[in-house]
Length: 144
Image (cartoon, rainbow, N blue to C red):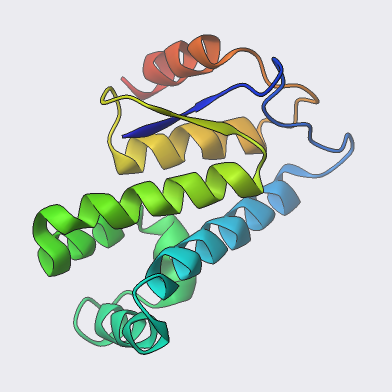
């Protein structure tokens, strides 16, 4: 899976003074944009069909995806089988690009855990994010 490394020892610079709710909402919007990008790579009609299928069959409207990532991941795996990994990597790469975080290939975390790590980093409210190994070890301690 894809993980988050540093660009010149700084992965994200968050504006000081932002409320965590606003950062959380901005992260969700960035995640949805990254999903749109990945789905659009299959063509506009496929993107629309995927969202329609997620909403009607899986009862997962687009706006709820950030809060229901496990269900989203399961739906992708049901629809695409092993091909879901391609879309997940595309989503993570685009999200990393949008948040100015360098993507690094690694199999330690799955898609949902990867999103959780970057979400916690972006909502922490710190001005500078520590090195990736520190973030990953902190995330693993808090998650497990």
